[in-house]
Length: 124
Image (cartoon, rainbow, N blue to C red; front, side, top):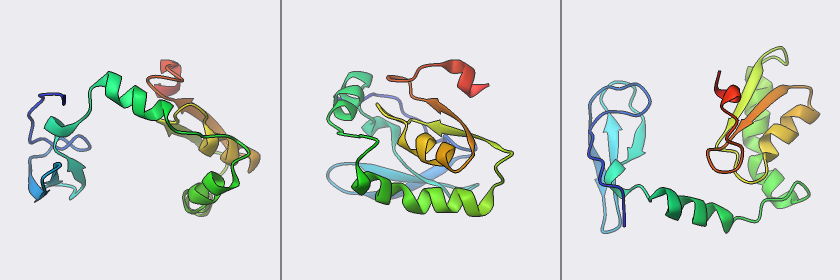
């Protein structure tokens, strides 16, 4: 069962969007303003389905494979921001590994996840 929210507005900038790609499983929209590509909201999982899927992840701080997966993101942040900026690991999942890796490099980080780290102070 998927959520039945129908919208052609970009979730990033609010501009209108058009169908970009469709196959038998889902379709994607492309924003006419910022050109972001996002899944058509009618294909989003329910909150229960989403949390169940996240609980299947086996994220651990000592998982070098996952740390290597995040390495391009960590490198990009370090290259393009200063340590005086505050970061947000939005949707960090059960273990905020990106936050942990950036904190080891001296960055101040907040972690937020609607299921596992629902501290809304991080969103301020």
